[in-house]
Length: 245
Image (cartoon, rainbow, N blue to C red):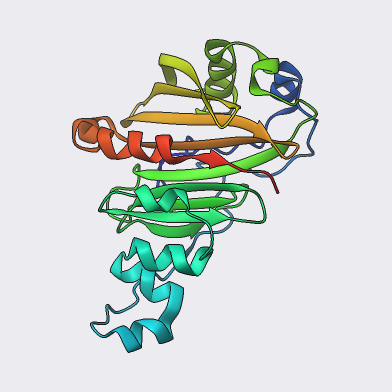
């Protein structure tokens, strides 16, 4: 679900069609409107324009919001959990962390992207100037315990891309799909291209299973900006982690 303007949906909404759910062995879901050309029912930009403060006393008062504005990873860590080192400790300059303690996942996104609300997605951040540059996370229930129970990286990625991440009118190409493990949990990551009549999006995805849910994170950019953005987008994908809740 790519552009919030006229582009079809390739942001990564994993509200599976029933046929897709059956193919991946996931629980059937009722119909939920997808985003994209067939209707974005809500699009609310949440302001991230907190003014940068230069004194430590004002930063203390503004707390987490101010920490995000100035990009202070150490302050973010102390506010999230002062007794536990988080993935954000290794965040490189130019990224901000997202930590969802309720749903059990975390990732980084490029500084300057805005959070938006799109029906069917748990989290979405995007560049307001380059609408194809975005990251989204969503989840659906599953009885599976491991992503490998659904098939190989190539098999699962192909189904996800064709049934969910691209519209039927788009031409898609799976560039590669691989598996890696983090703390004993298997993740599939993949790269794909979705071509529409008026744009081409080069995208990355990461999927895994935990907490009784099938998690999908997708990020991407317009093909013309892929060379400039690919390192940042790979950093987003590499930062995606699921933890038990």
